[in-house]
Amino acid sequence: MSDTLRIVHVVRQYDPMQGGIESYVKALCAQQRRQGLDPSVLTLNRIFHKPQTRLPEREVIDGLVVQRIPFRGNRRLIVPFFNPMGLRDYDLVHMHAIDQLCDMVCASQFMFRRPIVVTTHGGFFHTPALAMIKRIYFQTISRLTLNRASAVIACSSSDQQMMRRIGIEATLIPNAVVSWGEMATGPDLIYIGRLAVNKQVEKLIDFAGALRRRGCPRRLHIVGDDFDQMTPALVARIRQHGVADDVVLHGYLSRDDVQALLRQCRFFVSASRYEGFGMSMIEAMSAGLIPFVQVNDSFSELIGQTRPHSLTDFADPDRAAEQFVRLEDSVTEEDQQQVRAFALQFSWPELANKVLLIYQKLLSGHRRSLAARLAAAQERSAC
Image 1 (cartoon, one colour):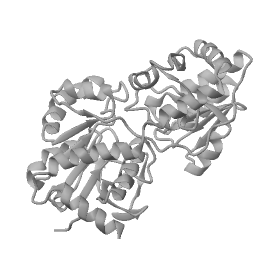
Image 2 (tube, rainbow, N blue to C red; image 1 turned 135 degrees about the vertical axis):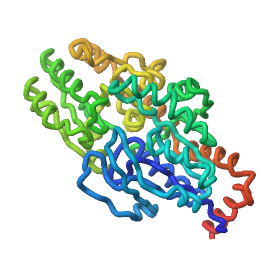
Image 3 (cartoon, rainbow, N blue to C red; image 1 turned 90 degrees about the vertical axis):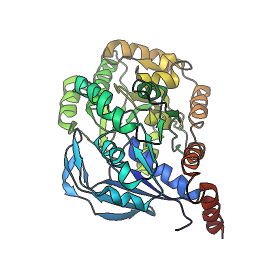
Image 4 (tube, rainbow, N blue to C red; image 1 turned 30 degrees about the vertical axis):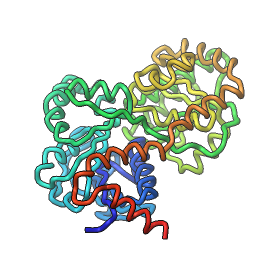
């Protein structure tokens, strides 16, 4: 047996898909490699919004082995095709998100007999679509399969409460963020995230229209991959409100391009109905951007006590515009420094250490303890 502890992270979508869960897995794997672990990724072989493109079965991305498996279905319902016995090649399986892939892996644990850790990432209640079916599924199938997991990590208090409703006590480990290196210095507004139905990006355009009607138009940058083919409808909405000079749809941008764009901005905006954690907001705050976001459980948990004026309801764009103008007039450079300091609390090394403690507890009874194997790996990496 190799001294290197082998961890496989199982996630429905991964690079080249860009999103919060994908970024989380990539950053956690990078930290685990620094800890002397040997992480890899198991994911599906097609991106949901680009189903015609089949990705390589095996690929190395940023030094990380990514294996992909075929499936039938779409993002709402998938049937993955893989042999669970292949998971015996690893010491521990780390699942990301609660979905059919998670259910299949947990249900087949008796075959490969490895500890399973599940990180919730908000579950699957991101939109009200099929809400009743989702609740029934969660109370029945998810309850049964998740009870086979050795440990569950909740990304937020709302996720932790959600798991308690099916009798599972999850460990709360809030997400970490990869901070931006430079402070934002411009006046503009920016949304960063995928274009998906639950993000309600169209309400940000309504908000931009309300600002223009008030005689105080602001430049709004919308950055993100079009996950739900929303671009034509958003373009039509921009025309409807007469804000073609105010709203810019950038699509997907590289990290360097986003960093350059942030220099032009001062506010992060989001009308998202539901967030598993709110990673994009915290990342934006690490550049000193002041949040102005939709009231939802995750955003309220993160900033409701310290920045109540940063929460609004974009369902009423005129009222939101009025509230924003008041906020904008009151923001100081000290406020920007404070939100940056708040965001920098969510560090990846700290999160990775907390996850490592969970691994250690689960694996301490195996043939060699995690501590011994990790020490051997770290000694080799230091040579």
